[in-house]
Image 1 (cartoon, helix red, strand yellow):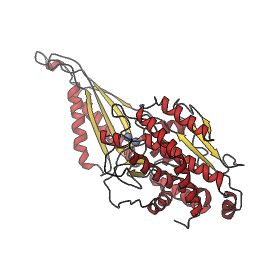
Image 2: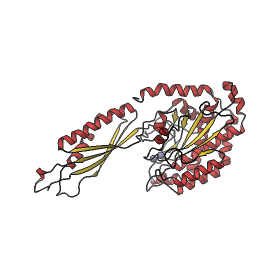
Image 3: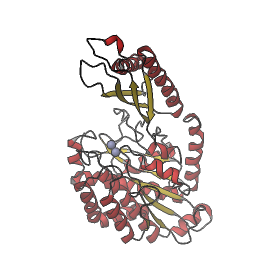
Image 4: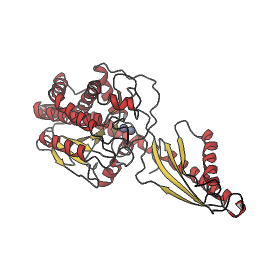
Length: 418
Ligand SMILES: [Zn+2]
Ligand SMILES: [Zn+2]
């Protein structure tokens, strides 16, 4: 990292902002945690967060883009001009899981985003940024922070819809943090394609005249085997996993219709294109071997892998380490998927994971409980502090901006076929 432009007074300003707003931030976190809403139904959280940010002086667009539970909240320094001066987008997730509520801790992600927004607002309001920015590039400080409300991370792809809506056209850098089992600066995040495969055969009596049937369950099982056989040839970070959703109705009827669901995961889009091609060959082989016809339906809004911007994540890391956070060199890989991957191929982005004081795996009832505790809030505000200071660094340090953009331009070439 080049020498930091963040001064002790900036750090003190962020700390006192977080301290002053702690009780309000806790209330927001608790309210969302107590009322879990699944993807695209985050009506309560949308209302709560937009009203909160409006009261705090942000310019808020509710129901932003195509999803009624998305929003955009902006705060600018005076004389800011859109498209001319730097903007940092902080991603705000708030959807929950069916049955196990906020077991992914998105109430804490929402809290981290608004805490960061408030701290940056206070920096922009209270400090003599004009002198800081003049020192850097000879101009007055003209900056913007956007808290972007991104619904439906758990499957619907709210961020993909926002990208398609043009929400990132004036955002130069994007960031978010996610509570995890471990502190993980650049967790492995795989792209994901979800697909349903329906085989169509012909029903027949399984004992009186099975030769008159065409067995759609055999096709589904053949596909499952083909995938299992191929797994040995997959790269360590690729995944294919599937289940048979519909496998027939009665043992004495040759099944004429089956449905299987599969998820395919790779880091790069280039690998994903190859894996999809192989998967389709396995599907067609299963159909051909059994004489079935097949219908393959890919879900919309696939998630891409995450291209971590190391120049940005190193800045985040240095601020976190100054607060005593330790990032172990070797942690079990995350290997999940998120629509933040798509954002990371749009603008330079980071997505560090942070632990909540003890080991607990996301998507468990234990993690759901942890996401509602004072410890959960404590470590979330610590992560928000590092995000707010990373924003400040980006705003003040023109070299850093250029370094992040240069890295993005160089590394994206190997990441995607586009
Ligand atoms: Zn999750
Ligand atoms: Zn999550």
